[in-house]
Image (cartoon, rainbow, N blue to C red; front, side, top):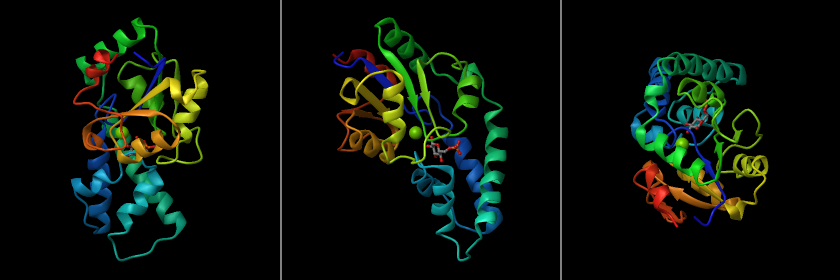
Length: 211
Ligand code: BG6
Ligand code: MG
């Protein structure tokens, strides 16, 4: 493999929290009388909680104060965390588990680069609380994806330059962030066909076949 480190997005790459994000946002949108569906949910991939809320509110016809918006985000997060509470090590797929083990065995440095402030909680739930060499997340950045900050921070934490790292992403905003930071990107899921990505994966285990 031509890389020395791999930086993984969390939601949609390491684990499938997408459905929980969707259900929690959907509940809030319904309460506020705002249309929201799975297609619209895809626009929220990779972007921060508050930016996600702004995207949802765009479809409504009311304006809200910053205090109201903060309360809405908190309401969504409370429901989201209740749903996350159901997760366990069984939610870590064999595909991801065997790939992470193989990449670690091959001597690669492995990091997480996620916009989510719930990253430590999720990693703990799925049994990866102390697996990664570094975790850069929504708690340590000022700019969310598509800004490259979270990936640059992760690379710095594993002491590698961007050119020596591969980013794995399922969000268009994440592919954009990786490329902006000077990283090659392997895209999958919703962003699989993104032309800015160097690789297009159907599943994470395809990383193990890269030379
Ligand atoms: C990203 C998700 O990983 O985290 C986004 O793809 C989400 O959909 C963002 O908005 C922030 O998550 P959290 O957990 O901090 O609300
Ligand atoms: Mg993602």
